[in-house]
Length: 450
Image 1 (cartoon, helix red, strand yellow):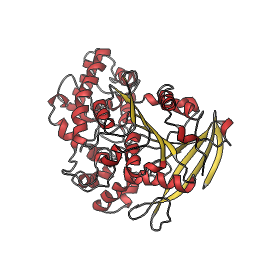
Image 2 (image 1 turned 180 degrees about the vertical axis):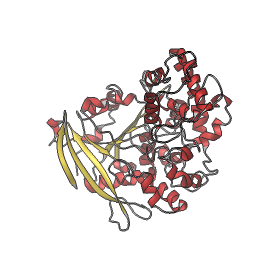
Image 3 (image 1 turned 30 degrees about the horizontal axis):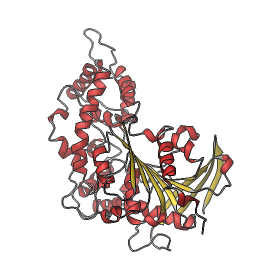
Image 4 (image 1 turned 60 degrees about the vertical axis):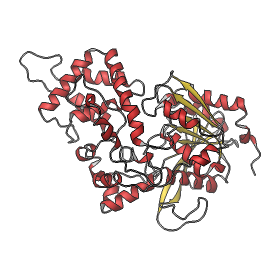
């Protein structure tokens, strides 16, 4: 292993590592030598201090996203599943390619990639087929080929099905939380389910805070009548304001957004005769809440592209939104939107403008890497235990259950007790682990290491 450093944070022993992986896996097999351009694959290994030198089973965490780096734990309790996992496992936290310390991609990077066609083609190498090959290479070369357990949160569940499609021999058991994609995958199908759910979420927000119906409308009317500039120079439009709902599927987002609008109007509840304006504190909060992470929005619809497509993605979220007048910026009450990309983002957001030309090409492309194998998933022999959140705003529970019904050795726990981020508490992973343990699905973890 290429050890960079070792240290302790409260409650955890930590080792940082990095290895090279091929930028392009075409014609290469994980675990074999490779030439040509390489990227850095950074990963962190964490254990409970008392287990720092113990030979524990391995668990690799598949981060949500896309474009998400691994969590940086403050202590085991800062991310509830970690506290439980380090009781039983040596936990591997990889930064997926293009994120964190794994050859990070941002607007500066993509500008260096040259003309838009080349940029678009390179972005395709940051999707599940490449990510999973990086992980399998890591397992084979740095962990002696020892089978490991995967834990996928949100998009990490998409990666889980890719792993089980491509390299099931590397996995002893899998856990997912809120992240089983529909197979066959379709971005438009997903948004046809999630936009109505987002309308209901907005209704729940206004039911909890009825005074915000008028306050949100006042802010939106102000944005329609004059240009408002955020601290980073981006224009604040009604459409961008609506994206504040992207977190409504996690707690405590209702409260966070409510308190943002509480300080939105600089003149408080209105000084008679005063010209209303938005407060600097509100504009700063909106900028932080709605600023895009590199790769997160550019890859958002591409994660549903599996092999040769019958139709291009074509800005699927925008297509669905255009069929629903209730989401128009002039409609009242103003509805918030969820986790969805729109063409205007790449024109108006400073962080996303460098991706604009490449995105237009990606939205019209029909050729992508193969990420799921339905036949292999049907014959799957790796125990898969999934938490399905009944009211999940991002990954429709009905679509998750339909996929799971066609995956071998899959088990699921449907609950409405948690939102999409339930894994980060101290209940969900413990429940999944105990269910798998009681069924005998983890026996392979105790096989002698060969």
